Amino acid sequence: MGRLISLLILVLDIVVILDILKSNKDMEKKVLWIIVVIFLPLLGPVLYYLLGKK
Image (cartoon, rainbow, N blue to C red):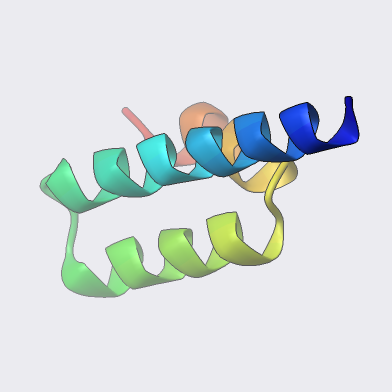
């Protein structure tokens, strides 16, 4: 069960990182959001969709 949750978190992070890379933000903002997603695997995607994505 733990491996499934870890895999789902990894897939979610990859999807969010790809969404960040496809966005039309400045490269600095993209790098900062990717760092947030990598270091905060659960909270990072939530923060990106609440605060970073318009």
